[in-house]
Image 1 (cartoon, rainbow over the protein chains, first blue to last red):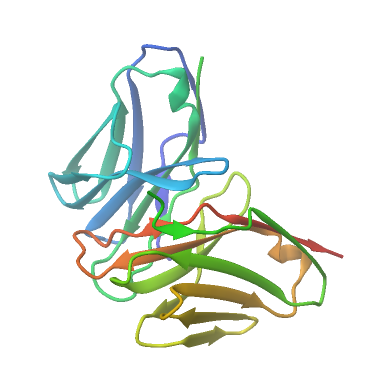
Image 2 (image 1 turned 180 degrees about the vertical axis):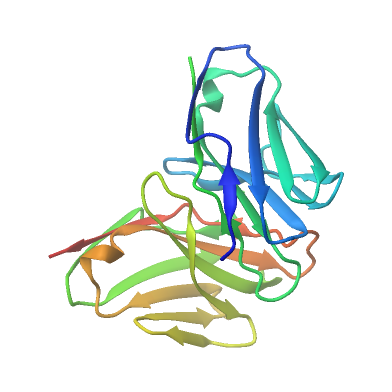
Length: 113
Length: 114
């Protein structure tokens, strides 16, 4: 079974703090993704990576950065957390070939106060 | 601009009846579609997929229909069970794609009433 793990299920941070969210997958997938989920807005892509050290912006990259130094690990960084970054953060991984489905981690509920 | 839309935020269905969840898309260059199911405080789990070269795919109680001319897909669940109560997301994959990117809809919350 594919496993995608995220470092924390719940996180509370203060405005202005630097926040690191870690994601690890164990299926040797080339592609990894960070989404945020907000009520009424669905899943919005923040960043994705298709190879080690390669990254591309998604739909809402502002205020975020990412790092992928190893194939199995993809980190999301909030440089200076703000209250509008309070959200559910979901990491996913997928192969590049069929089937294309993305496998998701359990999510991190981040609250910025 | 939202390329994948789920216009019904919620749906309630009686147990045993059919649930139909709808999804519309605007980009004719999508070639692969997925449905995901999400319970609260969990990540989405893959449910069923369909390629753009097909118009139907079936897996047990779940059937996905694709109407390319209308740019519309639907997920049928029959019979519906209380355990199906969750948020359902559709997702579409562009043909020209770096990194297997998908566009997700906003989700439909399904409640199956016992």
